[in-house]
Image 1 (cartoon, one colour):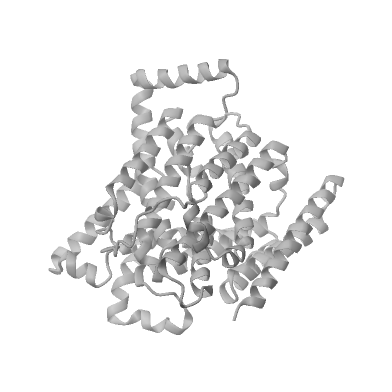
Image 2 (spheres, one colour; image 1 turned 120 degrees about the vertical axis):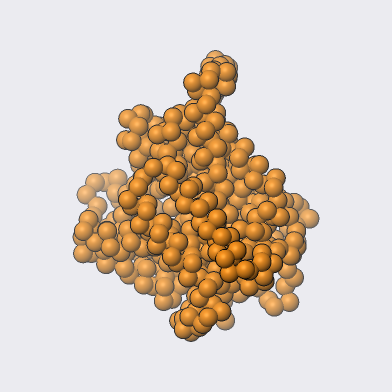
Length: 475
């Protein structure tokens, strides 16, 4: 981050050179448009994951929130990161956790709660999660203790990620069928009126899973996403189904009821927030903060290795922390570094700060289009994309991780996933934190690990109280 006037002058000169020099401008422009477009499509799918089921009428609000948050974070990280060309965006892990939180909030609120109060309470939870994450990341960066976060055992992180994969799979089916995925309605999915809504998405997810492992070109994902939309509308033409009929059968995102557009919360909204319900989600907020810190560090280290460049990890924590504070204060959602997009940008030659700003402009342009155009987006494409992300995580941590983890570590991954799938995500979090404490105690070899153990025990004890409080209040 620029501090001195001299540094600011150098920064302004570099940005001006990137604009006026064609050999830098064109790669930055091309890369910014590509990464921005991919980000928009992914962000729409994440918004549909959070605002699904009974909240689907508020999807335009969710889309506005994620696109605004992405644009702000992309701009701030691009201008202040220690490495020009880093892309920051929403990630499937916090999206899945927040989707679970949103569904929990809807179930916990009294039946007499108005739609406006439900929406405002959910937005407040999302914004508070961003603020908690921002404070946590900024604190780690200022205290220069970013290395501590990497001591969290991979098995516990893997359990969280595998559980996130399961939540994404559940969310994908809810997006496509407008109903939750459960054993009780498993057989009803194969009724003729139901399978047409989710089967194309499943086929698309399997296609993406196969094609992404065979080809690594940066155009693979955009071409497949755009091609799938074309195939969808081509199929409608073949069977002589109108867009109106497709929408009536629930094959499209729209039409939206347009209950409101996204806007930051203000003081007048505070009395409408059910704060007791919001505080019940503290364990999820802390989990998002921890996963965000790990993601920032792992993405930064991975990018440094891939590009053979030096990246200041503590600075990246501070940059991302400040960005999430800004986003949270504007009622936005957590965003942080994305390794795949950043490496993609580097390979495409977009190694400038201008590239990140251009990608942010693409997000703002999509935000300006409004929900009218998005209402024609096929649910099968968005659901298939979420399903692909979820299956990828499950494959990575249930199949591929088996060969690189010990039996104990792999057992912890399966245990956390099993508890999440059978009992709930909150209990899975609790088991994960207990595993963190036990593994840290069993593997400590240096005095500094005792400090780590104490911190983990404090966090674990706090989260235990939160979980028990939640379970005691759950009817």
